[in-house]
Image (tube, rainbow, N blue to C red):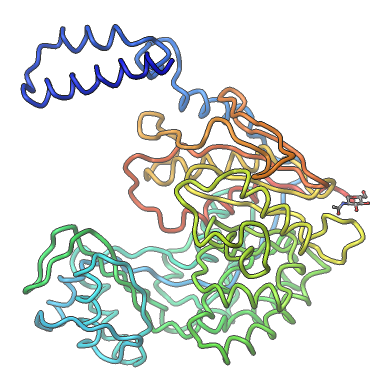
Length: 497
Ligand SMILES: *[C@@H]1O[C@H](CO)[C@@H](O)[C@H](O)[C@H]1NC(C)=O
């Protein structure tokens, strides 16, 4: 085999060389080379009748995804919501009449000069950054200029609002959204969404997203790559100010499911404030817990210490379900000394065996894998770019295959800005064989494109993995995690106890 591979490599190099020296190389030469490559090495896409892996997976999803027998009916979502204003960074600063100049990083922004200096600092590095702007009036002036800037795009932002929007696209659901909803956001929200009057406010919480392109120049500064600089004066979301209103509104709304997000917004308050507020949040969530299942969306955490205190303050065991990505999963393990916590970060696509080890540990340490446990946590929806895993404690949930597949299907279409998967615009990046654990004993598993949910069990937990068809030219990935979790919940059902 190695000999064949070596021949292929030499052949490939030769073609590359020929092509490089003479781009008009006759097609027949290329055809000769490709024809001499064994069929198995060629993408099956070249053969007209055989569907590509992507096509097979997409088709199989459509036939396997079925609605649960009992739907939630009413879902209450809270508590972070805002408006994302996406605008050209240089354009906005010019409109604010600031001149280009020196770069300087500021932890907190107090003026438009601070915005300029910090923006330039990150633009010159092509790095993403997010900052708090301290002055309320000053921020409102900048936000108004941004929203009115020609070509500025206004989007619904904040995990709760994004989850609410996704849920509301399902005609069988009544959705309540609680969060700081200003007039503009109210206008952008799906008509079907119910907003309790107590959570309406006079002004919107704007998050300004200053974009720049690769190579873009301003004064003497140039961006090595495209990226964005984000800032806001968001005190409502920062303190989860509508959490108590949210909990109070549940009694009247009588939801079948509660979805909570926005805990991560408190990171920015500073340690002493969030320690206090987190305790209050736990008390508020505890009031809900026995009545109705709670899903907590953790995605978009960035502070490891904060994640650690979320675990220590016992948020984890009082919710039934969590949604998170690979970064938060590793934070969880690091915070509690779990499996693979010595990894500093994932290297490329997270190893399925390692991910499984951590998911099992979370459900055994902080969940109800042992029926004797007091914890409520029985479900984790894990998402990373290349694949998703739904892990559930046996006996508590049904329709998992549909739920995980529906989440992956929405990721595969939405990243390309489409309503349905376009198989020509996506690529399979998930491993096609993997293990149920990083260490022995472990089961060897494969991905079957015509039945694209791989299932395995460890202890009292079942794992459902499906690949994502990754969009080759993604348009907008903000809120993708929220859409995945929302879609997964729509197809999930609690097992009758
Ligand atoms: C799995 O469930 C059984 C009872 O059904 C229990 O005895 C056992 O301790 C559980 N295993 C773990 C690892 O919690």
